Length: 337
Image (cartoon, rainbow, N blue to C red; front, side):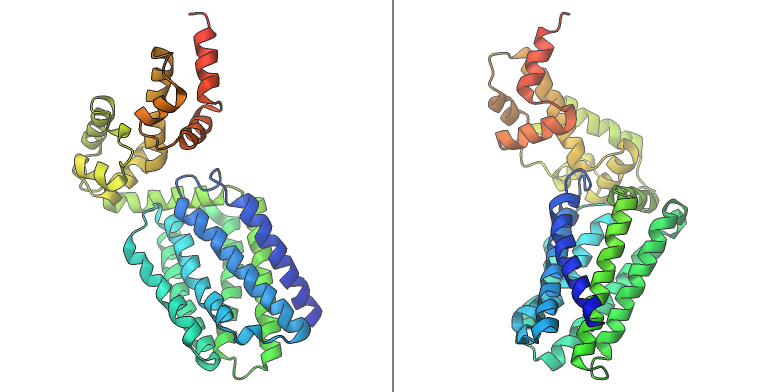
């Protein structure tokens, strides 16, 4: 049992680093900045926990009773919530009210170990109930996720087992508990890697499914065609995209609907997220300027259409056209008309 736990700890640390460096890229999480960064933070937190478990199981270090360990322990559930909520709700709207999820983490280092462990798992149980409720809301689309649901179900059972062990900690010996807990985290990493290998674009599929699920209720009283016409007018005539401070809330205010409704409308009717939509509008305007104003620098073009820096402009241009602005200008102007 000890050997298995140690191997799974090592696998978790290695796997977390690979996931952080490769999986959580803009291509796998388009328009999901919060989910992408929270995903990186989550796997790194789990890696740190597993590193501490490894040291404890190998040489019985006292890190498991430190304030740092308790901070990491309390961070898992809220970070997972902030990672999964944008995906399961089909949107990426961060608001200051979400800072309340940091409260358990702030309190964690001041708690005694005897209180910290059961309390951490109690908090985790609350977040697990939220996850169950959110997944149940997507039940009508379960036919799209046969394999993924099976893997998710296995991961859910591991999380549930970890919660039960946390509540039963006084019954287990400390060594046995941490062997089982480290093995549970390692098993979850195995299932995560399996699901990613079988379905690399799973985050995109989940986000689209969630957008479809919630669109009916949020747009039931909205004349979508009228709003889309107004959106087109704001872009083509008022060139509202050129405002670098333009955000979902400001644009929604000009279309007469809520931010959430506008986000769902763009997702379901235009097949993209708000950020992608605005980048496309800016890139289309930039393409015209690159051709019509040959003396204008690439930087001035990017700033004119709403980008805040040359690097942001270059990244967006490559993402949408697969080439740099300079290359686009050179190829297009040299092509015979």
